Image (cartoon, rainbow, N blue to C red):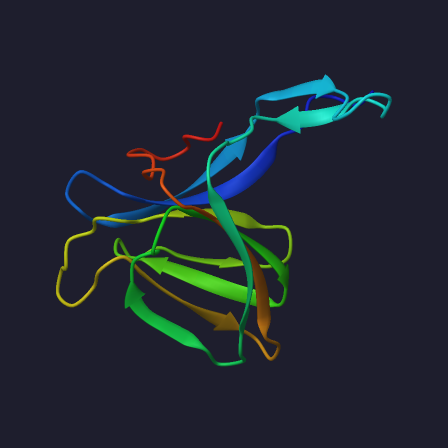
Length: 147
């Protein structure tokens, strides 16, 4: 079997000053096991349990979501197209299919009209995103909580 995987993700989070920031993190906690016998073992990461909502959203070409917070902590998985996330600290990250992010920028302060993040499409194709939103869980208070 191959080496234990490392899966990168971007984490958008709120620091103790109420400013959104982004950090590239990596999931590394994987165990080689069957998801359901008799299936062959595969690398499985930590599971999150509890109530969640899943949706697909399509951002049209040229779409810009002005400054806002993620409504709830959520995983965002681009399926096609490209999009960007700009945090209050000035970092701008562009992502495409397979480059996942965690939106946990709740409880930001409004600083000069900026609160949370801006996001939008990049290029000449819509961005199709799968969102897995935690219904009742708080966002982690520090980056890279999903190691």
